[in-house]
Amino acid sequence: MSKILTSIVFIILITALSANAYAEDGGTLGNGYFALKVDDINFQEDIWETNDIEKSYYVAIEGYGHINHNIYVGGELGYARPTGTVSGTKTELTYIPFEVNVKYVVAIVKALQFDFGIGASAINVDWVTVPGSISGDPDEAWVLGAQGFVNFNLVIKRFFIGADAKYQVTQNAVGGTNLDNYRIGAHIGFTF
Image 1 (cartoon, rainbow, N blue to C red):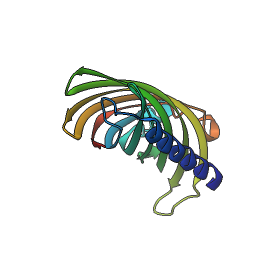
Image 2: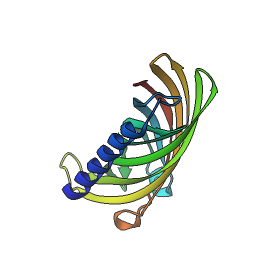
Image 3: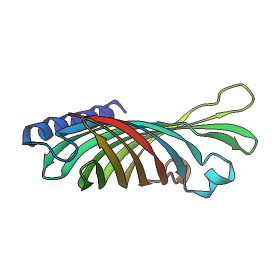
């Protein structure tokens, strides 16, 4: 697990450093930006919906660097923890995706911008069943995923606020459980 985490952090660091090195005059979102996202995450497999675990809040931080023209490369680190009851047993799912993305940003008008992109992800998933008040053994796994997304941003000087939507497909986790999901939410950030 630590090798995967170290590799992901290294890739994001190299991406951010190279983005700053190649960015000449900044793009529509400056030379780069950081943002905080709050989304509603919805898992797609029937087992999640049947047991009322499919929905949760998702919180993430993201950072992107300007490469050239309107292209940005960056990453996102998120967290969601939906809970529910499976066959009378309380179940908690911890979902932590590490994403590396590339996107294209277009200014609709000076202050309103639209972007779309794709990326790859490594996701740490941890199930815990809690019979009564005694915690069960965690069932942890790493799965790979890919995502596509769109964002709308209202830029006011060095700050922006916006709406985002993302669809993510994943490998099946332990027991063949599908973790495909979509997210819809809002974000706020600053450019540099």
